Length: 411
Ligand SMILES: Nc1ncnc2c1ncn2[C@@H]1O[C@H](COP(=O)(O)OP(=O)(O)OP(=O)(O)O)[C@@H](O)[C@H]1O
Ligand SMILES: [Mg+2]
Image: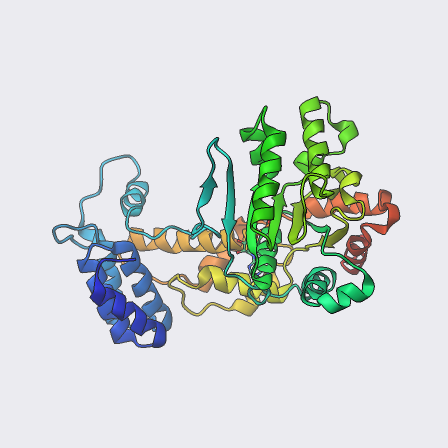
């Protein structure tokens, strides 16, 4: 938090009255004076998003962009061209300190837990709920039926003799919200979220992997109720027959033992795993009591795309954006592609502002231009998936995928 009580109370006041422009601009001015340029830009951007023509807001933005100015700075256009071959690049470089980070990466607020011997995993209580996940009604329903419902109804569980064991594997193209959903499930349950990327395990734990995997599960057991999220599970559970290195094989076996609760009581530990390539995952991992439910997470539908775009534009100065058009033009874009799209549009508008020396909003044309540069990344995945759906749908594991591909006329 900041050290300035006046700024803090203005921030609080603004939370209650987000449309109060004079208040916002006053706050932006104070932030500039306090040398907090990035925050001032964000505030001025919000003001401009609400009232793009507002001259005072424009002026505040200009000042904010000039911030780490111990002494007053001339407007951009009048400033000497910084040395170097490419003045534009040099200006951008110069602005890099004052322009806010393009994105607050999801989960940046959490602290990795660092154990005695370089164990790194995260334990957090995610603030996101399923309601924060835009669209994706089918996935939410699956999660509700397979996971959350039984969890909320101990009576029902007793009736059906179902324990709280076992886990669920999320699969689908990259960047489509698997990690986001897993955190939302933990948030929904009010449970802790312990997450680990298997690829990190392999990098960090060479030689010590089994013991460390065991300690990870122990940490999860101590934090119960908790969701233990194993990302990139294919890296570890890779069909054991294909894995040549024996250390990987023992690590895979260790994971099976942990999942089976042979190494400790898993009551209250809900394992969610994620992968882009479920066909590479050891089928042994999917036996009953292990990751026995499989949920397909598809590229975001229209409602999800609207939510994702709004999220990534929320703190940027935008004017007259036609969200419906963007949503219609972004079928097959992943959540990550959409984030990249917004970032690219912002870059165009910023480059223009730097070039002209006049700050301007991010407009529809910037996003349209970005659309021609940022292509949807899920299509290669869908074509691989198509082969799997055709030739390897043993036991109907990929029925959801088949249905989707048929619906899209890709099969
Ligand atoms: N339905 C959604 N609603 C809101 N935001 C979403 C949604 N889906 C994805 N996002 C956004 O897209 C970003 C990428 O999603 P996420 O990291 O969860 O994808 P992933 O499937 O885990 O990708 P990878 O396979 O690369 O690990 C998230 O940070 C989130 O902000
Ligand atoms: Mg992920």
